[in-house]
Image 1 (cartoon, rainbow, N blue to C red):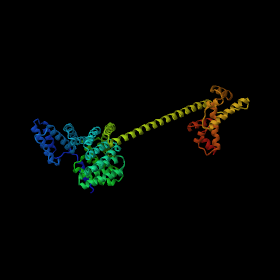
Image 2 (image 1 turned 90 degrees about the vertical axis):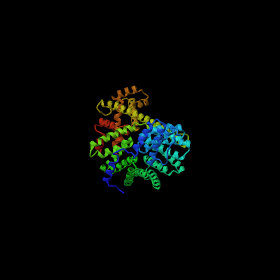
Image 3 (image 1 turned 45 degrees about the vertical axis):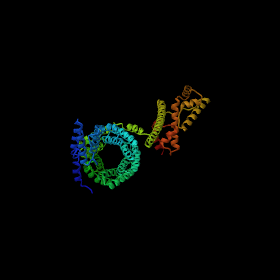
Length: 546
């Protein structure tokens, strides 16, 4: 069913008027405070049992949890702190969940309950993910993976592999996440846990969505949705619908994406799943903006902004702030600017985190199982690719530097030659009829060598001197004495005469082609020399000949 826009606006605008709390939250907090304040063992035991009774009455515990006076004080504190962490994570008070989880962790380690230790480590990992602390999440997930290996429990291994995949996705490394989530699916199929399998399918959908492989992302989200529909878990159905909407958006199937979100958003609100609700609102806002409906998109982005600001989730808040800026920039630019400033501040905060290094360190220490081998192989390939890439880039830079130097030298050489040519007015080459026979032979040989160089597309006066078996100084002195001109200027005139000849005899050649045939790499330098010798540009000369 589609919802009226006005109803949606009213619904969403009221979502975050108060912090997300459960009905018995005040009682839970009061009991936890009383437990910490109690000094007598009997009093602490009484408060602890009241705490567990409150959780059970609120349907948070699926079994009766009660302790007798014979319980060890550390075991009692372990259970209170662990279940307090679970409760606060469920109510999305992640700071409190982290605090109690950290209190429970050393008690779990000392108690020797490996199963509970793994659950506590995993809880801390996913709590740190929610708080955007990927390095800490990675450390706890690594510990949990090692603990789960000791248990040899495929269900526990699938859970921590799902957490590892989430960490890599949060660190914007979805290609790394893929191997963990697929391995987690394998373990989950062994364990036969359909509920967790749906969660892993959802994680796979997010990984493939981040990788741009939207068909696979949609397939996994639909598989997860089918399981949730079989299990009758409406709250999880809404999450899978949101993941489907992300993949559908990536496939440009916008109307289907909106339909999925319109089903998901009310359910997420009813379940008080504010994290997923904020993500869904961001996605709906993007779809409405894409449909050129900024006013309708604004309330969705505003709800997402409030949710993620309260939760301390900078990545998702960043998207909400940018969405609000885009909604307001044309109609209310002054209101838009604070959102842009907040967006820039959040972006700087996110980019300042060096998550990738901690991911690589964690992955290298997971153990010697299949995942370790796959990870090491991936890193080896990455290093080889990196070294080869660096070598290729370095070689290309050297080649480019060499070409630059060569071109620069050619340009400077031409400038010197052109300056010599420009020192005198253009004139026809002097007659050689009055010269002695050996002098005429000298000039003839120089001309032959010069024309051969011109045909080869190069000019090198020092090479001519060498072929004449003379030093450069002796060659220049004799040449100037015979013709009253420097060799460089004389050869430039020969080149320009050759250019004129080519224009006359080969009208099919363009100016750049003639320039190259006359030994010029640069068309502008050729044009300057041609105009100096012939009194007009090559273009003017060609037009004149037509």
